[in-house]
Image 1 (cartoon, rainbow, N blue to C red):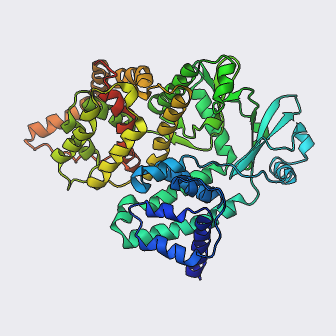
Image 2 (image 1 turned 135 degrees about the vertical axis):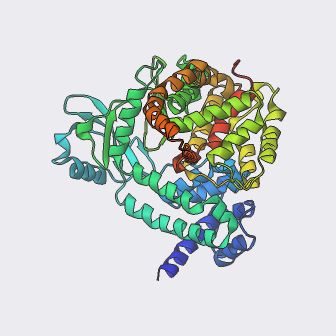
Image 3 (image 1 turned 120 degrees about the vertical axis):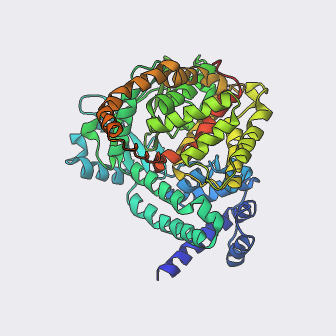
Length: 507
């Protein structure tokens, strides 16, 4: 029965693609077998296409996915970060995918608030605007006033969104399992893991208490930064399906003309966004991973306020340390050392040739070593690096998708405000400080000193073995980093190779 259910879902997917003339986009994806688009066309030949469709296949695919529901929108946003999988033209087109839907009825919004917070609407808000100010696939936002007179934004989940999303996701899981069972490429790309990541990300977005906690944690981390802040969370008016934060007055990043007319320094705003992202990722290991232009608001004094914290990313301290080691290798053009780090960490299978991998890294880095910084794009660099993954059988790390997407978004916003902006020049202060803090001789000396107490604890047993003429037991091999630490190789290269390659640091 489940098989026929999935076939029915697949048919509806084909219909959606046909309506927007998006089946031909599948022809452009090299890893999709030729028979698949032909089969979809055969079963949907009688479905009429919409009029006035864009010419670009990627943009048609974006429109089709946007019209099929929240799970398809999230899938499209994920694929937009994977030019290695879908090809750059399709990836570029998917970047136009807009997560906007018509608002649901205000009566449903009020019913959700009363069910989640208890009592009546008037018990929590003295005023509530029934017209939604924003509506996306998972939730919508209303402006309101609390009982004590504070203006707030109230985010409310769509009715039945969890059930609808999980229903759509079952088709993705079925297709991913089928592809991995019957395709070596499917197994290398770890498609089931990609779907699992989409599931985990969106399920987290559907618990607004987690989003509130994310906003609070990020706010604590960034409390000392100038030119950037987080809105305050109102916990008394927050629950699983309702989130209330302070209302932010200002101009959104998307409106470049208004920002300029208001006298804001556009170049400075773009630099701040990139540097804040790097500070969050490198210094704190916790970053806002949904940096599209609608989620950043500029207040009158030029302060950037971030909103919408449903998608966040984390990096462990060890992951950041690996990143630093890779950076040093690129700075010194020591590609063999960079390759060794990848092999030691388990990023590249041991069966591959280390020298050949080092040569591939050189092929990526050397051609752009002496280019002006404004001619190097982080997104383009990522595309080259992804091409290398296939050659050396590196498994895709789905958890890395948020990091890739955020970096490209940060660069995109800087370029949106200032076309001559350079991701790597802007990154210099943050990366230079972080490298010195983590890999300076002083830091390494302190780490060595910290090992002395542990060595002193072992000293008696070593003396006893020496007296008894017992050999020192063979040390256990150093364990590979746990699975979360195998996420970073493209991010590390994409984030910092440009900085290294373009000689940002003078170490």
